[in-house]
Image 1 (cartoon, rainbow, N blue to C red):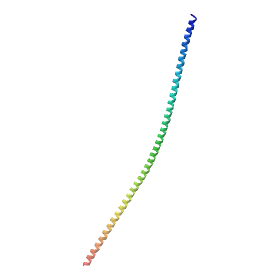
Image 2 (tube, rainbow, N blue to C red; image 1 turned 90 degrees about the vertical axis):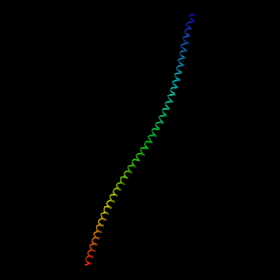
Image 3 (cartoon, one colour; image 1 turned 135 degrees about the vertical axis):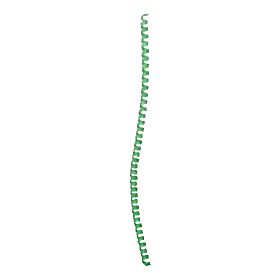
Length: 140
């Protein structure tokens, strides 16, 4: 029986080792499957991240293009406003010059009218004096 016992113990020990190896192999298979799933998940996340990045880069480019267009429009409007301001300033200067010239013409006209009025009064005075002299001279 001593011969059977060591064989039996050896056999049991080999069975335990075999079960442990099978368990380790099963654990390794599970670990590989888990790693493969993780790798697939990482790949999916990577693709999603790349697509998201491409989307946001495209959106950023569109936004930049829109901002550039708006900036160009603003620059054009500012240039137009400056040109309009220059035209308005020139028009105001012309209006002021026209008003000054008109005021000078009025002043000259008034001066001429005053001079003419004075001349007419002097002529009328002379005529009145001549009539008086004729009236005084003819009545004597």
